[in-house]
Amino acid sequence: MFSTTTRKFASATKEYPSNTARKVEAELDAASSSASGFSTTSSDSPSSSSSSSFNNASSNHSSNALDLAGLPRLFTSPTRPDVYYHLQVPPTPFSATEGVYAVSFLDEPGVVREVDGVVVGWVGVGGVGELAASPAGGGKKEGEIWREFRENPVFRSLLHETVYAALRDGVDDVWVGAAKQVGSGWMHVHDQRNPPPLGRIGDPDDIIGTVLVEDGVVKADTYQPMPSYRFWTKDGLMMLTDGLRERLVQSCRRVGGAGWVQSNP
Image (cartoon, rainbow, N blue to C red; front, side, top):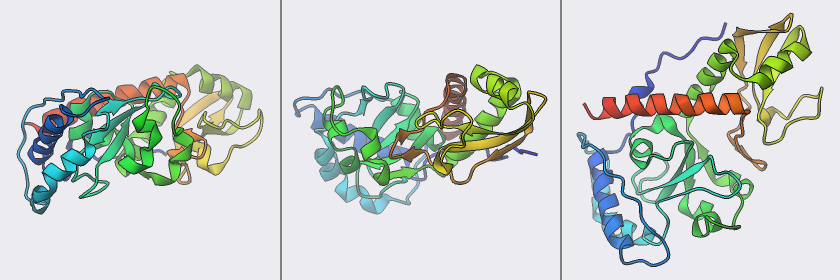
């Protein structure tokens, strides 16, 4: 029986001090104001208590801000307008010294900065490359930077909780219809970035999970996550069917809202 995790995503806030991050982003704003070619995005948010875990990196803040000043703070690509890249200054869960882009299905910089649970993963600024330098056209496609992507394990739990709930509630017509075709047996829930031919089993990297079907009805409690599933492969970032994607965005907003309150009491 599939059991949802008891971890409270509201407490899955970043391990580095929020006030420190905002201080560096203020420096980034100042540095960006003198840079040409990109407009910056304001991301004011309530203050929260800071810790001392990364205080030793404070001497490098100004230089880090200057290094990132020529990059867009928030962008999406033509091929995946539903995915947002958020520029984050160090220290981050990805690196204590280098700037990164946090990948998320949410476009709210403040929430993405404060709550790790809504971040799919991170890509170094160098990894995004041409995609960041020219977000409006062409450049480096998402499929070319999968090797440099670092998955967020917290998001994996949220993904599977969401898929389980969506199957239980029957909100995705694709999988409701697929269950009727299966009749009885195990049904694989496939990622849509590289869907298998009809009647075939997809690559292990592209199977999100599997669930038992009886008489054309999904038995959601039997849902089992596939450990081999990868958020980002050579075929691109995860791509869900419409019903699952919409429910996942709702989950991110729920977690983001709860996390905002938790991290800023």
